[in-house]
Length: 245
Length: 207
Image: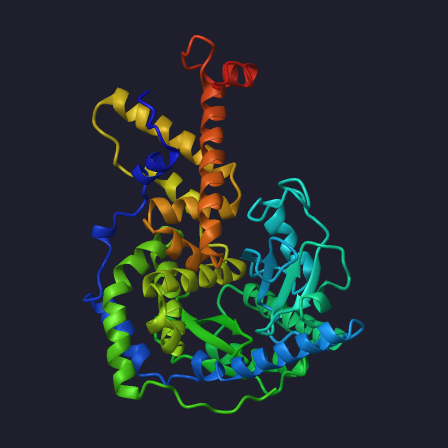
């Protein structure tokens, strides 16, 4: 067989979808989708939250200053974004970062798979493919920053807060709710939108998330079933109509 | 936990125009990306709809992204992962490549057809042996033809890491292809049937 020299070229030749045969934005379906989307109200944008960044940065810097002048200084912070887990290649905020898989827990363990897969490697700390000791701190943005070290004082040394156990509880609550929602939507081949809205509200309320919203997209006659999207940032569960297959 | 209502930075009409422009520029590639990773066209269109709905909600972020197309791939990737958790219908990308076995794309010459089938089988086998992350970065480079900066955006890793991660993935793919070739060729270089290959596993491996 005439072997291609590079596996990537070989893979490229096996592209399962010819883009030229895919329908374009002028197709009826694409136009309907566009009209449907832009008819919806937009929600608070991510940019709206950017205003907190300078404040957080300033607070982090002030806290960092305090730490350098008082070695025993220690503080904690809650996990605002349990889905944002950054895995660092070295015990430094300047080290390379890889994101933990979205399905991972909001704890230092979420980064284990990133080290196991060799996405991150640092031969000074652990052999490639093995998981070093991992320690979690609270990143500036409110997620977790996980460093490859067993130094329990690393957060303070880097000017970061340690995870507050209360914040961990909240993160666990959100993960639990997401798991419950996934189980619920897997329980039946087709859950009607109205039924899903009631049940999702019940699940959120049952977990104490009474201020979360359940936002349903308009139903279509050919899309009677509900799918969902879980968004901790906007504290919303979106219900999306899908076909009954 | 309630959050204050904030005004969007782009007003309604301008937002719709900006979104439509980006939608038109990116729709085809986004749909192709999702179709490559789903089993059913209906699933693909659901994922695309959800992806663009998120883009609409985060238009400020979407429109200011270094590459709006790569930003969409990232959202679509997360949406696909979310759907996979709640649906068994979505196929893996490797499965999608494998389905080519059943499509009438083979050349008419039987020998050539057999060779094509063998190439496909080897690639599918090699890809199956890789991690999900390796497969994704290889496919982003091969099918979506993204540069390192865009791959970093899609996979949410630093650009400086992409080169080494992609390099290692390519090496692992090459190794897997070599191992598979060694399994299916004897010391003389001739192909063996499956029984012989199993008996000779580990022999004649190419360096």
